[in-house]
Amino acid sequence: MIYLDNVTKIYGNGAVGVKNISLDIKPGEFVFIVGSSGSGKSSLMKLLLKEREPTTGNIYINNTNITVLSHKEIPYLRRQMGVVFQDFRLLPNKTVYENVAFAMQVIGCSPREIRRSVPAVLAMVGLQRKAKAYPNQLSGGEQQRTALARAIVNKPPLLIADEPTGNLDPDTAWEIMEILDDINYMGTTIVLATHAKEIVDYMQKRVITIKNGNVLRDIEKGGYDDEY
Amino acid sequence: MNIRNFKHFLGEALRSIFKNRLMSIASVITVASCLLILALSYSVISNLDHMLSGLSNDLELSAFLDNDISDTEIDAIRDEILRIDHVVDIHFVSHQEAEERFQERFGDGNILRGLEGRNALPRSFDIRVNSVENQEFVKNNLDLLIGRGVTDVVFVEDVAESFVALSRGLQIGSITIIAFLSAVSAIIIMNTIKLTVNSRKNEINIMKYVGATDWFIRWPFIIEGVLIGLFGALLAVGVSLIAYTRVVGYEADIPLINFLTDFMPTSAIFAFLIPFCVLLGVAIGVVGSTISIRKHLFV
Image (cartoon, rainbow over all chains, first blue to last red; front, side, top):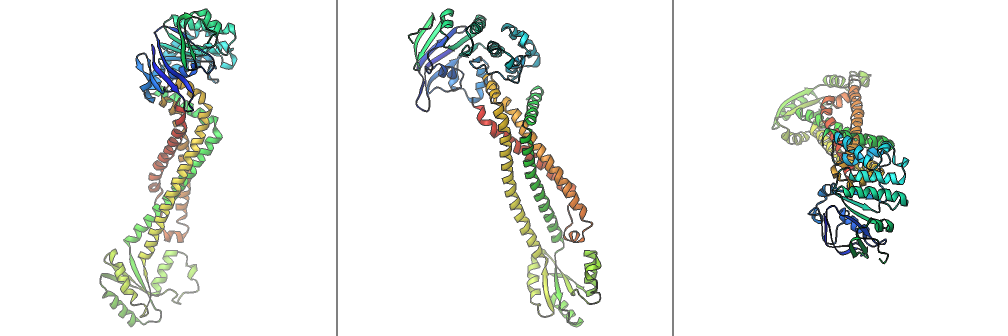
């Protein structure tokens, strides 16, 4: 699903984002990317989203070398991935339904497809009764569930989540993780950057630890190693 | 772009114009001012050209005669003029005919009231030449008669040259003004659309992450720019149409204007001006909006 071949990202000011990273993430995997602030997690996420270009190395997603994609091809790459952020990034002037439908609208889905898919995905994240609510009428957890619904409504094979539980209390964070686990169970590959030790320890998934831009540890099933 | 998307884009554009209505109105007025100057310049230049083409069809020289010379001397001057190469016709204008012409041109007899019978207007010869190129030659020969019964030679080409120079000056001046005002209008539209872009930065960002193409993001802003440009163009065309119709309407009432120019019909002027103003307004809108959205597309 994702293959990083000796990827390095050095910013204009000389700061190292990631350094000589090589990774192979198989379809259907659930991978935690962990590490302290400034370790390179966000740089890695931005590289996967093609928000930043690697200084050297190649990144393959679904067997496509995304480092050589032109600006025009980026939207089609992003349609293969859903994205969830710590700050939800919902549109305040749109309802829950409209926020989710928006993701389908911008890629040209018909109103019929939208009417069919949005209620189903809202039901999946438990928000069918909040369809007409605006983001400011929702709790943090509900907002993140809306963002999740938006990320998966187009059925992407890959979901990238950058600190999705960072703004949530522990109980709500668990609800989100359960939904993510369900999404993964249905076949979507998930790459999730987090600081949440308890969640990583409990879920026992693949964990990649990054420090100073390098991969320090990559274990098949495990927890958050405090050493790093 | 399909109809479904177009409806979405148009709705977004109209919403945004309404939301930033003060800035949108300012942009419409700026575009309208720019296009109004264009319409004004075009009307003046077209009418000058129209006058010039009228003049070149009727190029004549006039040799004005000394009031004190006798009929015999006049006949001698006539013979001498007819001997000049390229002169094809000559017509003597008496005091009386000169006054009649004056009355005819200026309509109102008040100007000459009290001067009747005093031969206030000089006698002259109207001289026609076989072609425009030879007017200069004939004029030079007629100048030799000045002081020998001829007081002055009026060469219509002088007037024509002045008109040509004036027309060229106006063309250069108006092109400069139009280019400058077009740039100003585009910048104002850019700023108006930047307000929309800034208020929708979040939305654009999300659109980029969920896989919207640049054109999907760009269209509502371009339509917004086009609508502002179009409203500005229609306002300019409306105002200039009313103004031009009124000026042409005054023609019949003011004999001096009637003499100076025969105005081009409104339809002839606006058959060009309407599509041109609309196209330029739309182009200004497209340029302004495209530039303002550009940097936000690189996410």
